[in-house]
Image 1 (cartoon, one colour):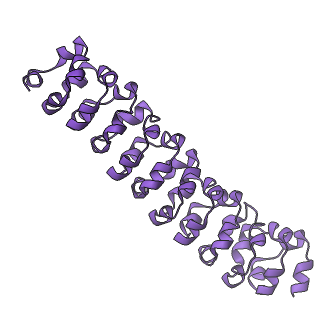
Image 2 (image 1 turned 45 degrees about the vertical axis):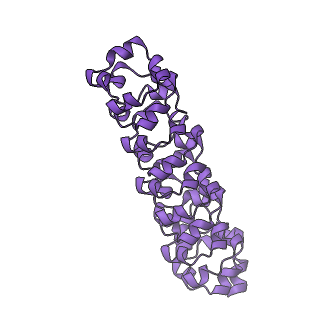
Image 3 (image 1 turned 90 degrees about the horizontal axis):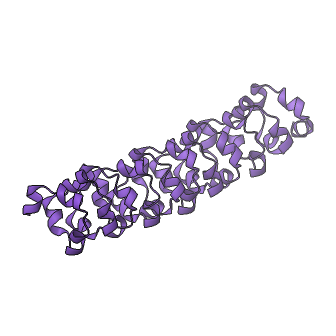
Length: 295
């Protein structure tokens, strides 16, 4: 039947029932041309047995239309080699259902190229397990589309390696929600580059948890812009360690409101250097509480 199958036109291929497709031999499937495969529907693609499907060449796989790629079932996806996965086009990856992406094994996820990762939708990215994301290279992480980052669950954010976190572009970081940023572990926060931190929006900075604030290294904290320091809540200010407070630059301290200054702990006030105290504005000095002055 192989010779007959290979001679069929695209129109004739389209007319084959799923029952007929399921009864084709491995040789029949292997004989299909890219043109014939591109004419197949999602139902026809899903009807190919796993035994036959695993025999498909990368050129045949890449010929499956984006409309038909959604027909791949879990069993078919499970037998794809990493080489076959790499043969899928970005258009095909983008068209896949989240349930199909979720079915990827860790080795299959790790085999995705940066271009394929960039094609993942927010739903597709959100369907990936923490092990799948751990298999991404730093280049893969940097390739994730900003519009897709909303799909990352907080536990997925918290599972990223420090190298992966450091690989995030500033445009990606600014696309994260405060909940996602607060999901970062202390080691991940410490891995952030100063260029990444200064790119955070005022809303993101204001939303940082006190645990995240405390996790900032002094060189990271002093890199914050005065406008970022100015939006810190009294709870965030109160969570600063004495080492962090003592490291603040004059312009950062000057950006603090009276309420923020009053929120400094007595230990923080004691930790201020003479230069820092001398740089305080009169309104800030006037905001100091009796307890702070007595410290």
